[in-house]
Image 1 (cartoon, rainbow, N blue to C red):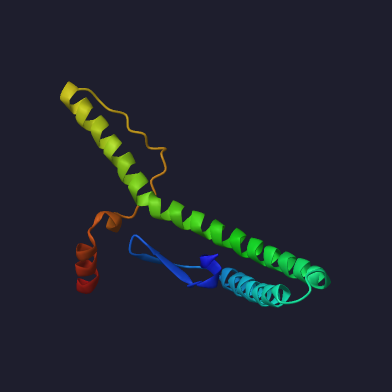
Image 2: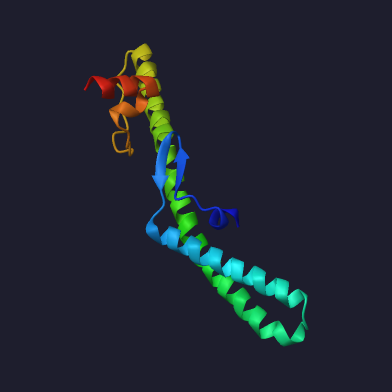
Length: 141
């Protein structure tokens, strides 16, 4: 509920800003409007004859439910994508650490080591640098 009521078009994860697509903004606005209309109707409904307003309440509940479902679908999909991307540097670091452990173990035994080259590693060289090192490098370029 808070996600569309107080929708901010971006989220920060690991120091990186992720901007939600326009459809998410639009769906948040539609859901927010439907929610406001439902609240107004429910306040009126509470102070009037209940049975005479039932179809209107049903319509507003249906409108809100559809608007919220549309917003939630896009919003959750985007959050999953953000989480997947933000987790990638850690997954890559774990993979690289395991490869290094294999090399160290093989080196101690004096044998050769076959590394897993097919494992997906989507990590940029700069990802392993600290934020201050990254800023220093950007400023000096």
